Amino acid sequence: MSVEEIRRQKADILLEYQELESKVFGVQRDAGYFAGGLEPFARAMKPPERANARGILAVAPIDVPTLEKSRSALDFGKALQTASELNTAIEALAEAHRKKVEFGLR
Image (cartoon, rainbow, N blue to C red; front, side, top):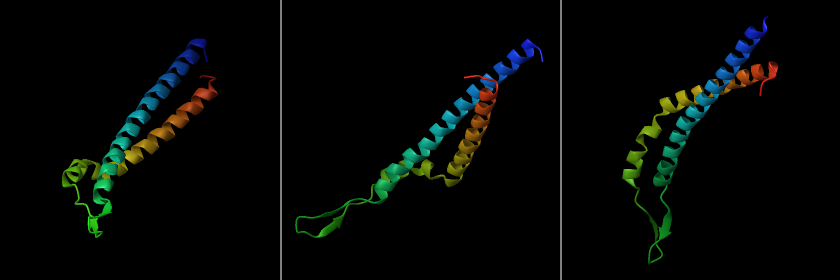
């Protein structure tokens, strides 16, 4: 293999690694979107219990507008697809990292 071919192969490996790294971060951001939408939903569905002035336990009403805002985060199929994409991207990034190490790249 010529020096030029080796340089080209190294450049391709580095480019592949950078692209996969960007993909992992992008899909990770998407996964965070689901988590961020579920946290307010979970809090709204479990309002705090408190005692009223007479000491009788009272439950706060559920905040329906907050539930509505969480609707897109509750798309379970999309969340599973995003999780699968993230796992696939992480595996590909690990393989690209292995190639980098094999070629002595940082």
